[in-house]
Image (cartoon, rainbow, N blue to C red; front, top):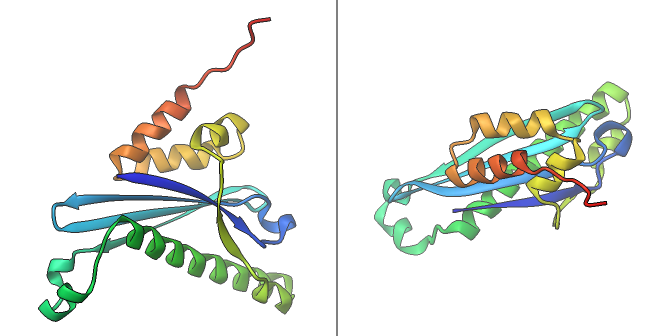
Amino acid sequence: MSHSIFSINGLPRPFFRDAYLVVSVWRPTPTSWRAEYYILTRRPDEHVFCGQVDIDPTTFPAEVQDELSIDEKYMINEAKQQAEIVVIEELSKLAQQQQDPELEYLPTGLESTIMTLGTLWRLGTYKAALQKIASTTGSKELKLHLSIAFSIRLGSNA
């Protein structure tokens, strides 16, 4: 259905540098939803954290089905929340490794970005991570966008 890219703000640059969240949402069956999320960091080496959220409202009790509206926006928000939990857990690990409790309480946030998969690929910053996403995603749309990004060739007419 769609994918979105967010920048992750507030992370300590010496450990994470630029970080992005890629979220893809689709319907694997007519009644279910899936959201995959990928956190791209350079800590200091390129790394990708992967996760997914699956929801099938037909498995909920009838009274909940009537009250709960699951849609693409809901799934994006759920994936963002799960990704934020991963970021908090990673900051906690880093605080312990660095023996710096302040790192654990850094305010972080997600922000929509104009960065595209093609730009990330062209920058060369996350090539291995993007290739891993392309090989593991169940999203046909995300796989297609990554294949387009991988085929971008830039040149000069000069």
